Length: 476
Length: 72
Image (cartoon, rainbow over all chains, first blue to last red):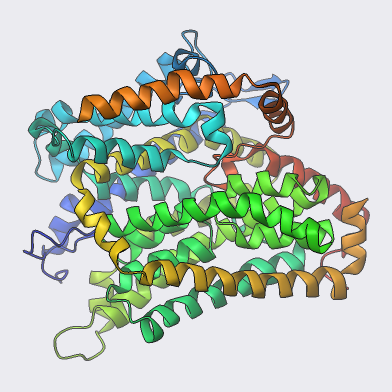
């Protein structure tokens, strides 16, 4: 009952690398299982503490959880980066950032130790990676930078790349560069934010625009990349297709991990997506006004096509409140699609793409052993917290407080650490090779063009033909 | 090389961007976005306060007309 053998090729720099171990050792030493264990520990502890009601009291912004202020990240700033970190306890506090550092060091260090690494060597490098992640957050927090949807992933990658391609990544840091571990644990935490009930927030129009169009665009773009462009790397093809059709960086992360993409492929896909997002965020609302589309159709179009959630909100606002509400709701429904996408991609990859040398379809048992287990943790977190959320208003308040004050903050940090690690392990030459051929760019442009056409058609059909009353009500 | 790049980045982040942020037009846009719960750098819907406001408005509509988004 072994997973497929680890690749010995040092250039095979994958997000997920299968290893060959007995099943008992897998549960103890597999990174996928450790991502699930850490996810369970964090989610269970956060939920229990919040549920316990200790300190849970009414406040101006609703219920205040006992975890509030304990986990922080650097916030916004205008004139000086020092504004991004507050000295007093609360939002963006030094105390909160130190807590995140200590908790993450303890958890990841424990996992590293049990998986066969040295805790001391891990800790010796981890502080540096965390420091760079903090700098990335501070860079993102400058208010002008923030307004252009230049997310922390970009700066984290950039800072890592800057160091690795100039002075070189210091030797003491390397034991702490556990990119896959950070990403998979972050994804398990993200699962708790994928609440299935949000799927029906906009009823049939929302489902049709987000859940009918998106898979069609994803699959069509992937097939186009394979059959027409003949992109050599299937994983690069899949990651670009997913981040363009689903919801940007978060979809890219989940898909890259599910299909064992190379770190450089994830970096490139994210860079491509964010570049076009900035352009679309400005151009699409102007185009909608120029052609006289209704704000509701325009908002739905924006929500279904602009990759990034934040950019969707900015662009939707340019068309008015109603457009913004529809846009962010459509994007939220697309966000929910991440779990299904990651699961579907993982199943497709292990059953169809990673065939053995005889080119026969693998047995079910082989599919199980190759399957990236952290995806199960991601799905389980989503299903469990969707179920809890559905229990009523009191549990909704607990889950919202738990996410807002703890797990969402940690999730962001873990992804930021991952991107810093990718940057520190990458070099410009590896990224540049994606730019020399134009196929990835053509894939994105063609796929996004198809996405724009199909989403516009569906938005028009839903709000101008079928649900005209709903559109009128939304406008009032 | 690292020193030069860091110097340039520090100049951008500590001098140019804060200058840009103090522009009254930019300030007005930032203020408006903050009031509307728009976090332009949000990665996921749970990072975006505007989603809660949108959900509240939709819920209000659905309370008045439960089949609004389910039957034409």
